[in-house]
Image (cartoon, each protein chain N blue to C red):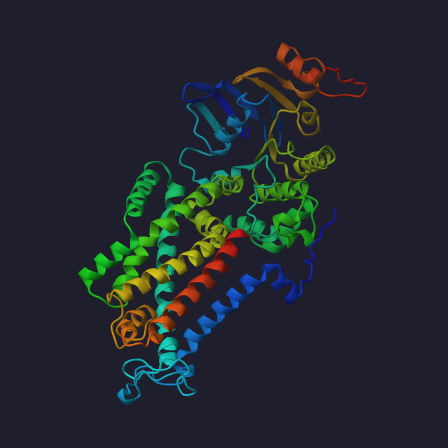
Length: 279
Length: 248
């Protein structure tokens, strides 16, 4: 019996080439956006909330690369500062909905029977309810801000994650190794935690990454409607909304810059996620 | 006797899978259950392993009682499954798979014991670090056998354990099973559709057909002078030297 354990050494360049140029560019953009959000206070050239009315609607310049808004605030700094909340929102959504959805899915697949049937029907009902409408309703009740829309959207994303994870958990559960573990005497809890979940993790990461883009657009829409963060906080969806009067005044930079930031980030995350899903 | 099954009956809906079957395995003995697909042999095995509930009948496993927990049952009876490609967790190395079982059953000196088990099934330290996908079907089945032997069970159920392997690997694994029985004193309940492999590992055999036992006895006797028509047909279907396939 021979055994080939040596994995072929793959050079980074060749590895990158195997992803395709679109995924590579998208991946680099994701990293840059994430780094920007992490380092926002240190790399923003100006204070994103510093008002300078004498300098309102300043054109592109070395001091203000994207110009200033109606209150003379530096747009680039606001864009950089806004990346924090604009990324943190979807991140919280996918973490909350991913954890809850997976827990529900694995429990339903493992316990089976009437429990599985009941959970599946409840998920179907939640599914029928548009996530954005749910989020807007909850925000209307609990008040605008960061938390209410994020929690409501997390709830709306639970059935999306749970449906995919339940199917995968059922498939995983039917594999003979699970029966082998049961014959070994392991508890259902141990098998789910130590074997089912690690095997489902790659799929969960892909699902979360795909949902990230959708959550970002949904949260930007909520901010745009004025139900998310309130001024003077910098947030991309809020910036698009606040830039509207300026468009009429002939200064569309604010809305355009924030919208472009949302679109580029969503596309980049989705391209990377789709690539991960197809592997 | 470590296993005594009496009047076992299992009904799925309106289908009677196992219909009043009785058999036993002595300590360190080995019994083959032979039959075609749907004869109820695998159902018998799954009931003994605790994966299915019997509709009627009694099963005595050593000193286990109805109150024994799954852990003590696991130390009495273990099972090796047919499909070596899916009976191991694909994310777990061989060593961690064995270590998990040894730890669960509270065994000491786990690294030494892991090495012993690998030795027993003819694998070495390089295989210990391997993931299932890096192993062949035969090697995976050896790992599955090592895992099943880890809690030192008194009875090992082998459900078509060599059916998915090619013939030369089958022979290796059958020899390994014969050796392991000598080394550990474990008893075998060997489920197979293939009479030709029975001789290598088993002392006794029962032949099942449509949920019932049609013949039982020592392997040599059943193979050389079968009494039931069905057994004769099974024995006649074993390929042997000089056998010429009929052309259709």
